[in-house]
Image (tube, rainbow, N blue to C red; front, top):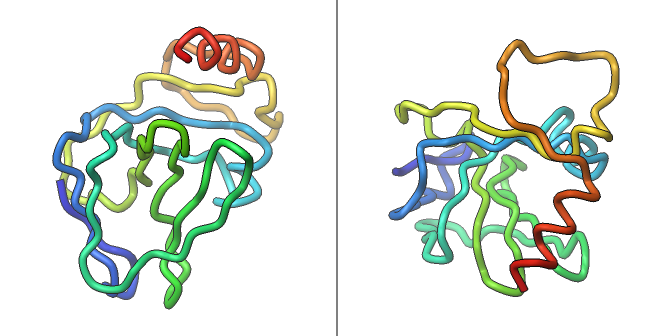
Amino acid sequence: MKGTCLCGAIEVIAGDAHVQIGLCHCSMCRRWSGGPFFAVHCDDKVRFNGAEPRRYRSSEWAERGFCGDCGTHLFYRLVPDGEYFVSAGLFQQAPLELVSQIFIDEKPPFYALANDTPTLTGKQVFEQFAAGQ
């Protein structure tokens, strides 16, 4: 799958991406994106053509990437294993499907989604992360 930022300075190529979207309601993702973060789980082999993404280390285990020219949010990346969660909006032509929601306990009451998906609280997410280590 391929996509670009708003200005076209960065092309994102996700070779082994899934067509499933995971949604994060955590306060950091909402602050970063202005709402929940819709992400496609990709492997660690995401490539970027054109300008180099700017990176912000948002926690000890993750960094976020964006275009330094137009500000488009590109990815959330787990530092320990290098896996990318790429912004679903970049892939305009992909047949994507929302399949899960995390940090549901941090979702504010001012929006609701009609999609009936499995959900995890923040505690459950961290428990799964710890079990996978």
